[in-house]
Amino acid sequence: MELLNIKNLDLAGKKVFIRCDFNVPMDEFGNISDDRRIRSALSTINFCLDQNCAVILASHLGRPKGKVVEKYSLVSVARRVKHLLKREVILSKDVVGSDAIEKAKSLKPSEVLLLENLRYEAGETENNKELSEKLASMADFYINDAFGVSHRAHSSVEGITCFFDEKHKAAGFLLQKEIEFFSKLIEKPVRPFAAIIGGSKISGKLEALTNLLTRVDKIIIGGGMAFTFLKQMGYDIGASLVEDDLLEDAQHIMDEAKRLGVKFYLPVDVVAAEKFSEDSISKLVPVQEIPSGWMGLDIGPATVRLYREVLSDVQTVLWNGPMGVYEMDKFARGSNKIAHFVADSYATTVVGGGDTADLVQKVGVDEEISFISTGGGATLELLEGKILPGVAPLIVK
Image 1 (cartoon, rainbow, N blue to C red):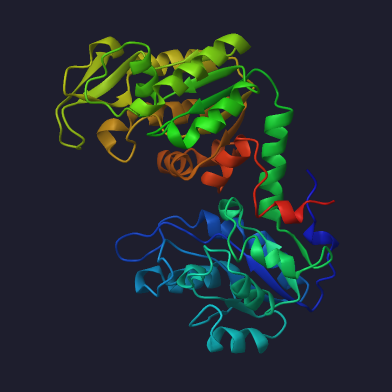
Image 2: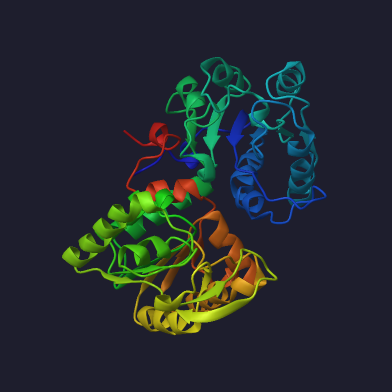
């Protein structure tokens, strides 16, 4: 699909509204622990500033649910944007209140205004038309560079596009790059193509898995979701995470893989523990021998060796979802080893999803990955074959 291109807009000296995704992780003291999403938006922001534009940035942070919650303020984000752009960034006190409207109106060319958290307004997640109109009234042009929220039909993502014609709206460089990369990956991957799918539940990845079956040569399953498949195969999985209502769906996926000739791999051993805790007693067991009442929290070394062998000849790897509870060091080894192997591979490697992106950065191999997506839910919906609500209005007709 071809998107309206920011380079084709007559931006010189105009006022531009850029929807960014600055929903960055914070530590307990309110400091940004990973600014990758902010850095990803810099090329679009700088492109507009180079054309002497007055730039209005907008983003959400967390889930304040339509109320002003101090810990979700964009104060820290404004500080980081200022540091990265090396220029002053004005932060409004509200979203579409008198302060924001006044600051937007008086914004001069080459100045940057950051609106306060969009989700302080209840209408944002409701795709409220009135809110969209107020946001649109602040600028001459609208740019969507927030791939991570483009699967949401929200006021600043989808609703706002109705107030700009094709000559006054476009995709930013990040959004363009994400869509182009995934389109190529899904439509014309270099084969063999393997997908590594992990995470805790099948439910969030059911459609993506079904859609991937028709596109990949191999599927590797890890994380908590593996136990639903293993239970359906008749294994006693102890107290491991399972979605009993999706056992039939798991069987359908395995049957489809067999029908389509897609190699489908599940763990052969796991690190099992008595309880979901860092200090819990744990041991390595084959998947057939998980003790009663124990739970599998990571893939074991035999599974790591198997998966390395499976990936040794592939030319394209898509990874979405960790192999275990990687947040706890004790159950992170499987994910870490797969991360190193994927990073060292000569294949085109694509990491999608917030947790997996966080994992590869934590392990220190993020520079070795071909492409790291800034999206979580948006990545999954693209893999499901859906056209995202925030992208649809920007497709060249």
